[in-house]
Image (cartoon, rainbow, N blue to C red):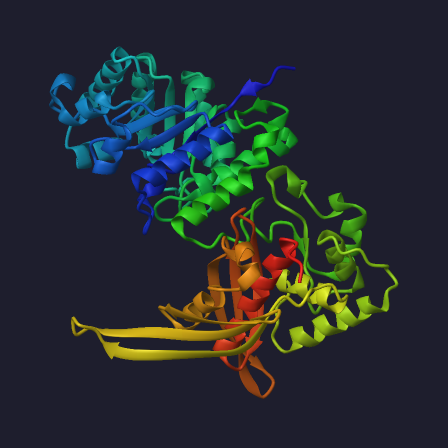
Length: 531
Ligand SMILES: [Zn+2]
């Protein structure tokens, strides 16, 4: 049976750019548009030409993309003709394949915010759609506050949608602009809309203010809508937009949708989803959400020992979809609750071949339990666990030795009379017969120590050139009689692989040092460096 086509519209670069603290440069926008295009998203909304210099430049030249590159803007202003509206003119001049207009569809807003008549609002929609069609653009209309508008005055809300459709708009998009509508309401209202406008011309644009933007999008599809608008990682103002990173795998992997619908994202591109999600975090300099559905680090993590042995025998028993389909992986956490089966499974995963009856496995389990009791967290620090396991089994070469390190923090006034704090670190490392001394400066003591430590590792330097610290987390723990500090460091290398290491000590510098050391040694092991 032929499946129906369902279209995906990404607005990370327009609505997502409204997020507090997000400020995309032109280059950022081009990078993200490229990722979305490659993933197979049908429409990429780039921004609002004329509203700011970045967006004007973005639409200043033709972008070579397969996706329908879309410019966003307002319909003509009330009381003006379409040919005498500079905002509309800028939009029509934009080098875009499609134009997505936004218009009011709630009578209350038309009267109070626009201070115009309902008839003039409808005329503005018709004129704007017609002008864009004449320019040869595909046209979409975002009906702002559609659901609230429909509840207040269904005839008028529908009239706005119909005005655009009858004038030739390809899509009429129903927006839950303040995100307050619930799934059953969306389903009921979209069902009514689809009696007037064919569903394959109806889209949904949901915000996440009741944490139901994804559910609302799927409810709209059930009711007949055939375009979903959303953003990567649910980026967007307030609580965000519908998260395409959750919607895409649901459409691809849940039979209710996958049997009925086809989307532009192929099975093989679906495997890139985790990478695309992380690339956006990377660009925004944000730590990825560990608990994100499908792509989070914890999305397929299992803790208890009894589950772990079952999961190894038959993953389906505990997983709703196979993690590899979206580029994620199964993770069995090693923790104080862990049994032997967790450890064995984890050794399997990191590729350490060991006889299941080897007495060193019991030793490893004991060491993990002892260390977790004093504050180490191996379920969060997979790379430190990997090293601990390899060390217990005698498989980590001794690459180098830090003979001595010294860190100082200095507070002084600079030439401008401003108070500044600078840190310096000196590290003495022995690599083979060679002794190397490096100094590093940083914004803080750990930063300085990291710079010094990675400055010169002699013959190993080439392995760690691409190493980068991406996250640093500190927690003070109450362990027994004294407080200790736990440091978790997340690192990344040139291949984009990330790993986490842990250090614990009453001294924060020492805890950081342990985690930094583990990160470097892990990278050397991973790269196959020999001693
Ligand atoms: Zn929005």
